[in-house]
Length: 252
Image (cartoon, rainbow, N blue to C red; front, top):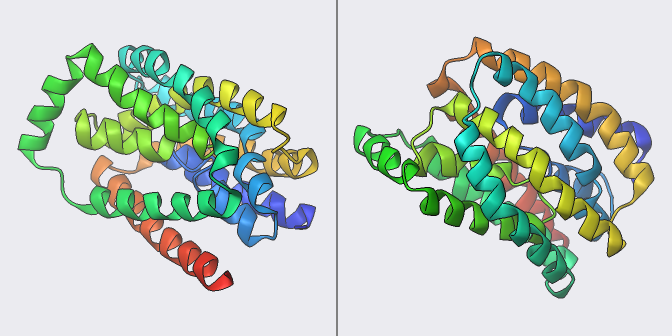
């Protein structure tokens, strides 16, 4: 099992990414914990207790700057919350190692798409989709299913949904994602806890590092332009995901 110091350091790194990009709570935490030696199902779910306080901590800077779209938050919670429970209940039937590999594959796909420039046409189409509440609810429901299945806060899919599909600016996508994650993480945590997937010593050490780091990351985000944040997000996601997938595939 990983050392508490290693898990604490992993929490600091993931928390900083969480605050900067509105993503990283479990999407990065699961691979990090796995690389530190935490068994698969514990690696998948033990970051969840830190998701709500880390999301709230990271969102402070965005809230102060008005970079949270509350209409999208409400619609996303309505669509995503019930699906997180369904996804979490289905997770034991998928298998721990398969979930880890799936996390890495999704990260690669998302990162590559985010790196592509966002065209004016994409923004126009996004504005039309944003005005349709059922489109937002449906998109969030799909994210919620993966959120529960991968024991994930959902930001790694919510940020691209808001950025690429709904046309929100990068910082608004990040701030809105953090607010939604705070809500979606609750049923996901309760379900995985009931299934016995949470290692509480690992969860405590990870939370001790991630919560203050998420606050610092959220405050730092205001010093970067939207395009620079988007490119940095895409580069970090792709690099980390490729490395993580390599370690998981060669380990078999």
